[in-house]
Amino acid sequence: MPRYEFSLSSPFENARLAGAVTGGSFEEALDAIAKETRVNEGDMLEIGVRGFPPARYQLVWTAEDGVTWRPEVRWAA
Image (cartoon, rainbow, N blue to C red):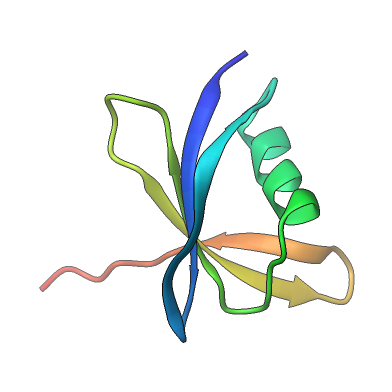
């Protein structure tokens, strides 16, 4: 199973939590982080595998799905 390294922060504090999680899929890893940690709307998650740049996601709440990680949009200059 892949090992994903992650860092979780909020708009009000830097790198609140860092660690690693294993999962059968990327989606399972995201779900595990949301269920096993204290997350709040607006939190930022950097997650990836060793040797590759991390992906960035923001936590949003939806009425249909509950916790959802939305990919961060980076605009070109």
